[in-house]
Length: 217
Figure 1: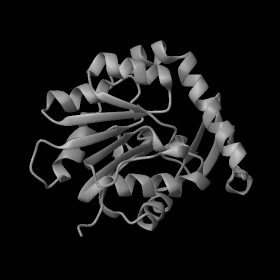
Figure 2 (figure 1 turned 135 degrees about the vertical axis):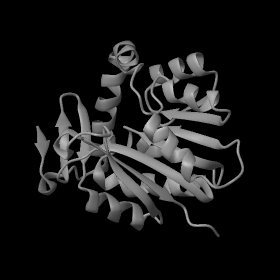
Figure 3 (figure 1 turned 120 degrees about the vertical axis):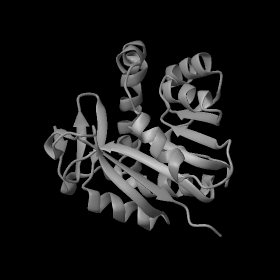
Figure 4 (figure 1 turned 135 degrees about the horizontal axis):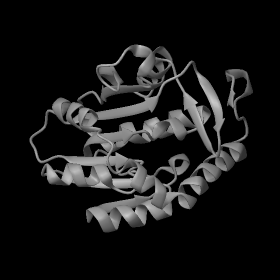
């Protein structure tokens, strides 16, 4: 059941508990999640991110919420240097083993990212798990880890600014206008947005993908 905006998590201890329970769900279901998502085609999102990066290749890409490492393998196969990040320890182990990439174990509520290291940040089906009141801090971290001119892709399930539990996982589901305001407040400039899966009527496109640039300095 989703909670309305008036019932948001308030104390930071509640944010932590929501994140811990969500991560526990992924820890307990890691193998099934890997098998269930192994064949998912997110090439549209990967190609969109790479299309907007303007610096010379190969690029350094941070895959936020990398899960078992499927997309790390895709970026590496394209010749780029990919680094993964996930809060689920089992996913981190899987991603390191399957991709051979550097993978960091970090909670979204306590990101500690290097400044201006990455040409692109790939956040596919990840940022919606951050409680809304903690999201601005995470977005500032992602902004800071990008080189000037670097690009962020986010893809999240869309909604009507609802937030709450779906089973054992916590999520926030934004309207386009709300998501745009949040990213702009963090210092990003919008490049484009689109709905997924491609080619379907809007009511059959539950995913909102958007591309954002950290302005050059």
